[in-house]
Amino acid sequence: MPETGGAPVDTREDFNRTVQLLSALALYAHTLGADPAFVDAIGPSLAVSLPEPPPGIFPPGYDPTDGPQYPGGQP
Image (cartoon, rainbow, N blue to C red; front, side):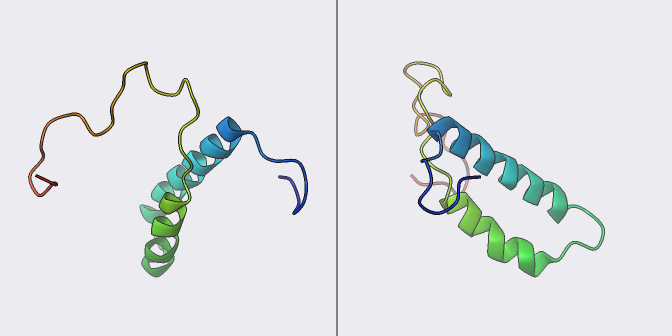
């Protein structure tokens, strides 16, 4: 991991690293003895820090806002 002032992190690497951290937190949340206060505090902050996906992650023309309306979702 680059230190402060170092070379910028590759966009794809940053996205992948954040997804891995979210996955690890989800796994931790379901382990015996997990601290729910920690998960509740870290989860939203980590999710908000997820950068825009780099080009090529989703297929061309993919629209994440297009799809079925789910109960309780935005109208």
